Image: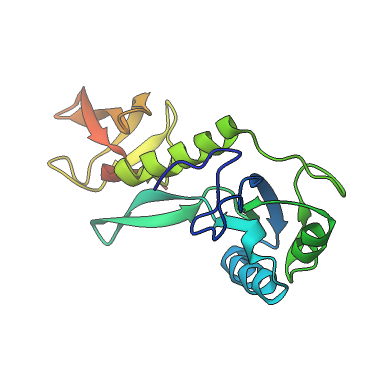
Length: 196
């Protein structure tokens, strides 16, 4: 997917100048209705003949990894629950059309003249979404001194204490007692769970 800029043209814009004024805005929605809002907004602007002034509508997600029944499972999670990003050539008519879409509570950035996102802000969101597809994040975060149970690998069934967290590599150094002695073991996030 090409990285949209703050002034990017709409995908599939008909006329040469169509989409020249598109900017990214954040729309606040009811939580868990982001996809419904995306569909409703697209239908609404088409019905009102404003679809040439609306570009891409994006619900930012990230891939996350978790253990289920002893297997690594990758799922998608919303980066910003309750928010939808949209490329709009915004004026009063389009503002009213978006604001009056079911389950939309308004724009982020204020009242009747919301502030568009900068190119850098949009690119950060898209970069985070893209990198999570390449390197899914674990759903659970750990901290030093957390008690954990090992659920995968040669130390399955052992318990220990987190000594070190490497968030970049998604690994932990866990102190495990083996034959009465503390032994540091490096494990991936998905190989442990918090002890109960």
